[in-house]
Length: 244
Figure (cartoon, helix red, strand yellow):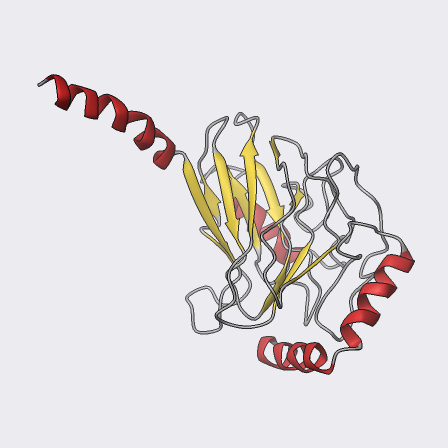
């Protein structure tokens, strides 16, 4: 009996960790329910201290996890978190992860994908939330309606790892061969404004360089590096056709 009690005592902390681990898939495929532009699940419940793991599993795909607000779903929230863009060239590629720790569970945490290629992902429904109500004027359905009704260009500001109500300690990773990370904020960096749409190119990638720089030089360098490779250009063209 003593040994059984000991085993149960040891198992309880592991069970608690398992219960507090939530995984959200970033992106999908055309054949999946919900299609390419989705976070799955789109609305999750979490407590303070819980870790939300975002897996960039949609392949091919190029997505971000960018904090926004209920009223402006497709605009970066001032002082919000941002993963940067992660370009997955095709199926079979190990999925990088972005881990967010919930620091304030008393209010909903809203986020969207700021990618513009081949068309804005936010208005296509690639939005999500943590602890969003299911009813009322501040519900997840309201957030969806606001995103669909958005008529401008989704904001391209490079955010930070630490956001409002949630924070990350590191950029998405690991980044395997073939996967490219753009515009990821460095640890301790604050949000940097960029012009809407800046950094988008026919390559299917958006944003600044993988160093987290939002400067024009960094963006141009990243774009040139991709265009210089016939393989990357070909993959991106195929991806654009497939996603259109």
